Amino acid sequence: MNDKIKNIISKKNNSKIISLTAYSKNIAQIVDKFVDITLVGDSVASVLYNYNTTRKISLDTMIEHAKSVKMGVSKSLMVFDMPYNTYKSKKLALENARKVIKKTKTEAIKLEGGSKIKEIVEHLIKNKIPVLGHLGIMPQSVRGKFKSKGKTDRERIKILKDAKLLEKLGVFAIVLECIEKSLAKKITNEIKIPTIGIGSSINCDGQILVTDDLIGLTDSKTKFIKKYTNIRKVIERAIKKFKNEVKLKKYPTNKHSY
Ligand code: KIV
Image (cartoon, rainbow, N blue to C red; front, side):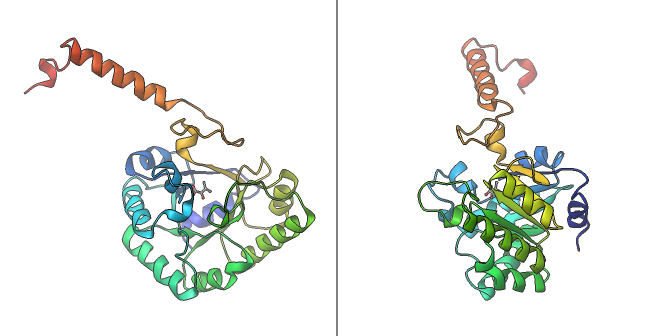
């Protein structure tokens, strides 16, 4: 097992696991300094391409983003989010995972689902592909509005069972998306691998967010998002200053000229 993965697992019950997304080298270089996991998320579909579903992003587009991200990642574990329809069968999943690893040098992949993808997860792990699980809201399966998970007994039993199954299959951690807090706590307590929450409360072993959301580059108003800065304003100020200086002939000076 990769040392970075071992280190992530060892953080369970010790220190929180920090994870963020990156879609390009520049952001990855910044993110990598602070996180344990850099995820090339299929959220790129909505964040950068304005698609109304993550289903629309292609494997080849994700690969190009991951190649860029790889140039900025050195210390954290790089994880590639396998897009919709790229892991429909064992054969296709392994072929695509190998292609992704070969082209992007990513160190692990993320798949959405539990018992439905049991054989696929099993096959990938048997073939030495490290897998990060993803339960709760699974955007690739959602049509329409996203609703938090774990409100009914039936749902709670199913999610807990899926988490235990994924652990048994050998995934190294599980992303829990928008899971009710007492269920997130129960899952976290009942499995030995780490849980990484997004909208699933403090009761997880770590947290993940979309970087563009936390820096205020997107205008997403989702409840679980906390904006730590408004990077749009910072960029706007810089561009306004540039514009003014050009108009006033203050830029470029001799210092910036050949
Ligand atoms: O696509 C994504 O960014 C994700 C998250 C867990 C943030 O899957």
